[in-house]
Length: 83
Image 1: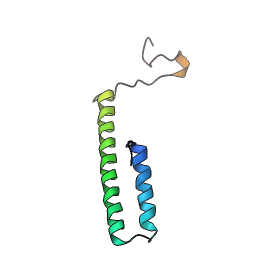
Image 2: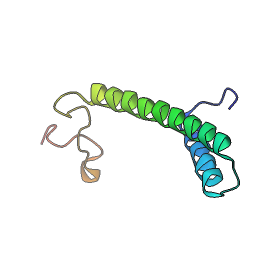
Image 3: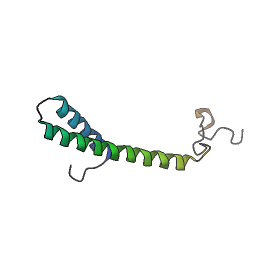
Image 4: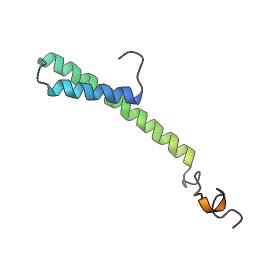
């Protein structure tokens, strides 16, 4: 895998590895090497998702109050603002 180590690229590579392992054309050493690579990609993907989740929680705040409910009927102002 070249320099493309984003989440989508990792998930795509995991899918390729699963397909190769399902094919029954690999010898034991090749299968083990692919399995090891897949586990590594999975670990990195989980870590990326964990960091993203923490960042979202950081942006939203403990109360989840960063995003206010908007009403289409009031011109896009947050509900509760000026009645």
